[in-house]
Length: 407
Ligand SMILES: *Cc1c(COP(=O)(O)O)cnc(C)c1O
Image 1: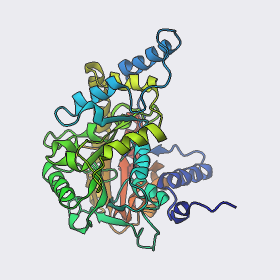
Image 2: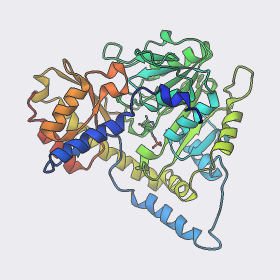
Image 3: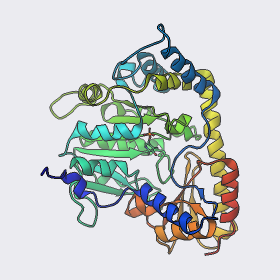
Image 4: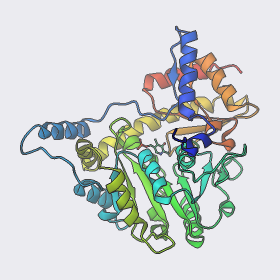
């Protein structure tokens, strides 16, 4: 028989979100009357906005006509969309031919693994979005888990003590560094000075940064960079992965992009961009043309206005949750809320509790689903992540229940 891919056998933890869903399902089965509200998974809830929706409807209708029909497009993406992303989001920082359109950031993070192969050393923020490590386990780069984490991975604790920015000196030379800002799950958006340190470290040590900025649209503090390319030197060491998912509610529609500057090179001098182009053309066949029409609409004036309002709606939810979680009921129980106002996530420390225990308690007493911080890495123990994606009425009801929680 065929041997199982060792990478799958090496995966130690089940994926976090299926476990959250399972506990919710089991609770609902045992308590059919419970009206469960989810502040758990980072999934958008509000409808597509009119202008962006209409652009996709029109394009889809056009496909049903002789003049409007098109088959395969360029694997790297619609040229007009690539130009528009470069011009609107990376003026003077990246050119259209460095922008690659994808079916989403997670998919690009998976394909990145094929770009670097199984011998690359990995560093990740701890806690982190699970895909960076789990994807690297599947390809073999992360190695085996010896009980203290995967041997090929350097974990960079991001804690209350270090202001959720890691000690970079732990990272070895020639390492692939996954870095997410605004961060999922901590919600922390790194400052210009911090990102400069990161970029300088990478350039001095032969490292490449995979910079996940899926939440850039949530940044409201103007001093915080919205892209890594605002930092001098980033074009030599950073690949940016991005997405329309959280920007425009495209979690189900599926559209993202990556930026691979021509200046980044492998040890043998080959531009990384050359191989990434190969990955796009060989392992991917382009994003849906209907969806790319929606992406274009996101970036014109009307679309930008709509997406800003959409994100503002979620940020208002976050402020309501912040108020509740910083309220008397929680403060008196030594609960600490970390929230900067630049992300959809509140990172909340329940000192003395294990994450899964406080998760179960809040599910049971409030019928509210959260995400256990420990599922994002060991430094997330005792934390819960609260997500602001939800209808306003549900968020208000969840806040109401939470404010009466006894524990
Ligand atoms: C939601 C999320 C993504 C996934 O984006 P898709 O484009 O929907 O695949 C990527 N990175 C982080 C950190 C996320 O939270």
